[in-house]
Each structure stands twice: as structure tokens, then as C-alpha cells.
Image (tube, rainbow, N blue to C red; front, side, top):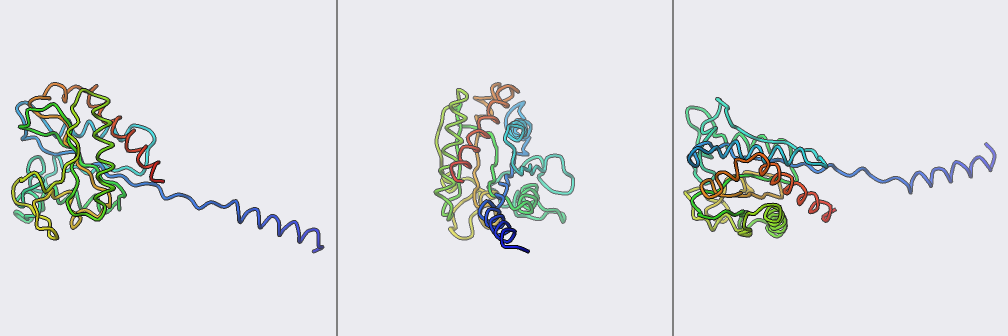
Length: 240
């Protein structure tokens, strides 16, 4: 091999070395729509939340996205009902069956998500609004608050829902499920001992009474889902 050929190969190697860019890890997102059908009169929180999740997942760009939803399953208890803040509906094993919530979180963890978003509808608030919830005492609390703030603002801007801001799950005073670290009342699906995703946000979208007709309108469901996804994409791109 002559000197000219050696120089050519050396320069080619250097060009290839410095032009190489490692492929970015694709962001993994898990959506957890409510599976509850026992909330509100003539109202299915499961149907509404699932429609919003589906709209978000269909909105471009797409990532590695998964939906975890126990609705209709027969191998778990409280598949279509239950509370995210009750031990009996989350961690209890009944007749050899785990709960719908526990099954959903097991499925989510298998996907090793970077971001986890739970979608629910509120009730008894007398407010046509949106609320964001994050877990108290979490090492990613600041990042979770930032994302939840962006999501609630985006939905409020795209609709006529009032933005009620971001709250800690420990402030609701609901039922009896507690975080093992803080000892405070918590949302099961946001607890870091249950959910391995670093980023975990729960949205309460509208009220099943005050927002009854609004939430069941497919156009509004689509608009909400798109707004959530668009704000999520901006947050991801900012982080990158």
C-alpha cells in the first residue's frame, strides 16, 4: 500500500470518527387513562380519559408510547372502578387477584418509561377546570412540577377549562394509601415505590358534573389530547 493510499484511508477514518453521532434513545411514554366507570351520573370516566389518551398518542410526533388500561379485564379486581388512593383498591389481593391499578403499574414498569401520564376527571369540585398532581417528596419533584405546569397551561389555553395549577398528591386528604417514605397520603400510581418512571404526572381534567357535556364531546376530547401531546413534545425538546 503506497503512502497516498495510507493517507487517504487515515483521512477517511478520521472523517468517519468525528462525523459519528450516537443514536438518541427514543423517549418512552406510558399513558394511564382512568378505568373508572362508577364516577358521575351518566358518565364514564374510563371512556372520556381513554379517548383523550388515544388522541394524544395519535398526535405527531410519536415516541415509544404505550397505554396501560385494565378496563374490562376479568383477571384483576376493581378493573372498572376503585380509587387511586385506597389500599383496598390498589395493593390488596382479593380472591387471588391483584387490582386493576396494580396490573397497570406492572405493565407500565415493564416498558421502562421515561414519562408516565395518568389521565382522570375530577368530581365534586363545582369547577370547570384542570388540575395537575405530582408526588410529594420525590427526587424529581421539580421536573415533575415543571411538566405538569406546562400540561395544565396548554389544556387551559386550548379549551375554556380554568387552570387550577399543580398540587401535591399529599394535599388531597383522600382515603388511606400512604407513601412508605414520607408516610403521607399519596396517589398509588405516582408513588416512586410503585412506579419506576422518573417523571410521573396525573391530570384531573374537568369535573364529571360541571363539565359533564363538555368532556363527553369527541371534539373536546381530541383537542385536550392534542394539547397535552404538543406541550409534552415541547417539554421533551427543551430537556434534550
